[in-house]
Length: 93
Image (cartoon, rainbow, N blue to C red; front, side, top):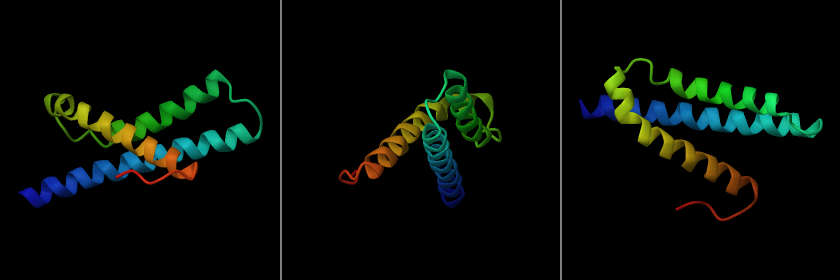
């Protein structure tokens, strides 16, 4: 069942990437209109986090707990890739 596990991991990564891109896009759109309030920022982050958490709903509590460190790493890596890419920096290796 390695193919199934690979497919599940790819789906989680896809959802995380989409959530991070959507979050950054929503922030940029709001920032164009002026300063982003704390409330607006919290809303943007909540929506992104909700998308990520939804991708884990099919797992048991123990499985989700085991997946959290990997999910955090994926979130941070995707965020960094998007920010560096937008700044015109070198791609991550």
